[in-house]
Each structure stands twice: as structure tokens, then as C-alpha cells.
Image 1 (cartoon, rainbow, N blue to C red):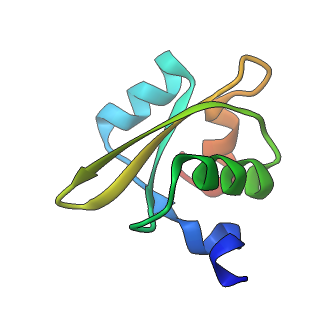
Image 2 (spheres, one colour):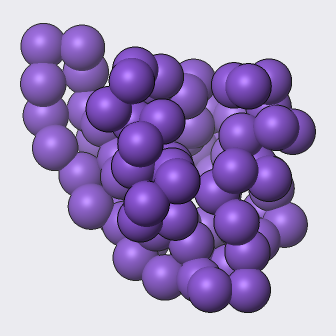
Length: 88
């Protein structure tokens, strides 16, 4: 039950100059996600939490943890989501 809660999958946004550029140019946002979470779980959690539609999710493992690059559909803007969560 806890595994399906969006806050347990999406830990926090990963913000650097490069990820801010990613938001503006590619309409994507990067999050640190829970180890063991799958792409469909990340997509569902992001859509539920921010009420947007996700086009695709890419994940990679780094020394900072598991990172998910979440690309939004054209109807939604990553900048708007960034404003809501306080990145800007």
C-alpha cells in the first residue's frame, strides 16, 4: 500500500544549471526517485502528484541515487511544475 503513494516514489527534484536548461529546452524535469521503483510507477506517481500527463520516463543510476528524467506532453510545461514545487 505504501509503495503506491506518490511521495514514497518521488523523493525530491534534482536541480542544477543543466537540469534547469533541460526544463526550458526539452520540457523535462529531473527527480531523485526511490531505488527499486519502475518507470511506470514513476510515471503514475508524477501524474497523480502534479496532475499532468507524462510522455516518457528515463532513469539512470548515479552516485546521488536513482534519477528519473520525466518528459511532459506538449500540453503541459515543466516550468509550471517547477514553479509549483519551488524550483524557481
